[in-house]
Length: 238
Image (cartoon, rainbow, N blue to C red; front, side, top):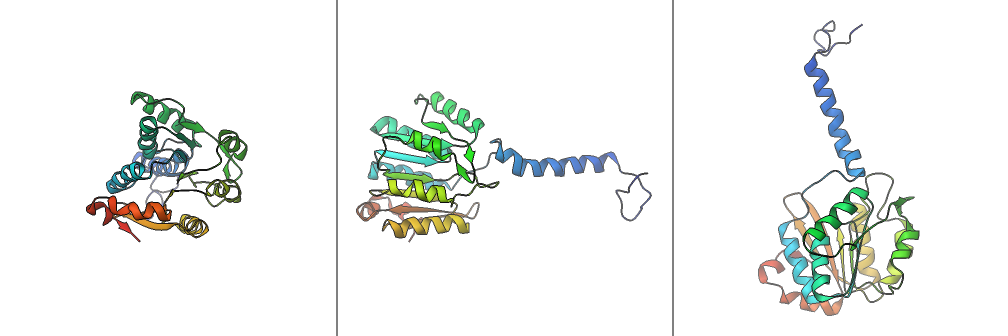
């Protein structure tokens, strides 16, 4: 017995076009969730002004210890900075696919393999045992870039594991970037870090995808924002 693909004609059988449409709907849903969850989904990231500001701030701040959660385009800029100016840089990535993708991409740019470390999820955050192992010897993070985990499934960026493990390493932090602060959880994280470490907050709004990024600077570095070109200072909301 056939169910109808046309509610106006209940005896009309499903057509090949209808089946094709249902497959497309299912695949689109899979792309949104599963492909992201296994690291196969791609999307344009952040406004162009942010990348200009990031490079300028790296040069002004000159952090020696950089930790990133969630590898991406920022990983390329930071890796090149560390390769040229020295320091320690670790980028934690949960997806095996992205782990290989970014390390291979960095090697194609004549940058060392190994900046990106693969740490799968455990509970609602990264596997804290592997995070601790990779952070051995690091007592202070001068620049934290917080853009992970992906927060697609049960993982949460505001996990208790994050707050117990990372803030103790930020006692002398110079700069923090918290991505996706247009979302309540990330906004809460940015405000918490700002208040805890007495940082000045700047926000970059991306009109192309209606997203926001928070940049938190300590008092000494905040005074140097005026070194940015005027057209970039205009992009920073206080």
